[in-house]
Picture 1 (cartoon, rainbow, N blue to C red):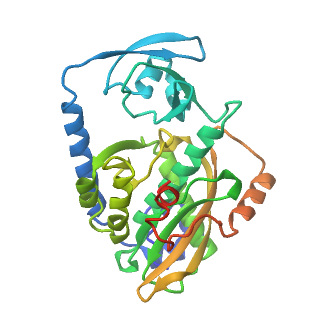
Picture 2: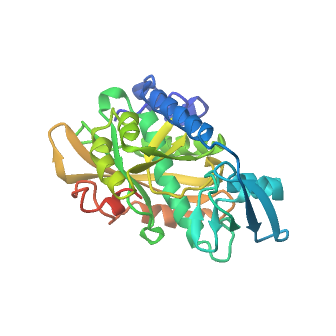
Amino acid sequence: MPLKVAQMRSTAVLLHHVIKKHYSVASNVSTKASELFSDEQRRQRENVGRIEKIEVRYLGLPHDTTLVMNRDISTPYDCARHIGEKYCRQSALALLDNKTPWDMRRPLRDSCTLQLLNFNSAEPHIANKAFWRSCSFLLGAILQSSFKPEAGLHLHSFPKPNIKSGSFVHDIVLNEEHWNPTVAELRALSIEMIKLSQKDLPIERLDVSCDLASEMFSDNPFKRDQIPSVAAQNNGQVTVYRVGEHLDISKGPMMSSTGLLGRCTISAAHPIKDGSENGKYFYRMQGVALPSVLRISHFAYAILEKRSRKLNSAKLPNEPFEDSVAEQVA
């Protein structure tokens, strides 16, 4: 098992053998991709030109109000700052004109009505899908940082979120055919997810050109293969998300920050034999999590953990990408 768990000092007694066996240094690939993201983000902001005002009609507690914001600059998160600090912390995403889910940190384009969604809403299904999708994205982040280079890890994709499935998913490729992580190793990954949550990092979105996306994911042959199909269905653009220095492709939306992630368990790694070949072996990583504001008993959570270990029936990564781009890029 080629995991790197350099940050496990606080759990040394429990995971001593994991740390000793699997420590390695991080790659610079993520740093380069993150720098490209920052450069493009800066370029897009500088190209906004003359600042135009828009009216955002906020609907919700503590009271409805109208905000005057900046087109293509102001975000729902900026609006929440005007309403109250707790709305910045609690809001998972926004709903525009009562119909369009919108990332909290994505610039607003036009005048609109705005609702801030959280996980305590009477109808939380939109926020829940964003949460499940975000968990898959964050799982990819900790997998990318936790494997030694010689493991040959490549993130493939994660399927469309389905709360009823009982697990969030990220499909990966390794050069090891018979990888079977121990309970301690899965627990180590779970701890890394919790640490990522505790950092309360923003989850950022950026639409980029097909060429720039290819450069960002130049080290990943699976992403490079997917990018043309993604761009073809999105007016030549590819939507990229970033947390820390980790980047991945997704249609979104996602929750606003890692701090909204609460209890989390990486519960299973299923080998996917169909489509695997020498030097390229597919695995389906699965987990279960709760938003930070939700609390349930240990007994109830254990039931969720057990359910999440069953192989998720979502579309498999070895199925032709061109025929299922909407399913494979969640």
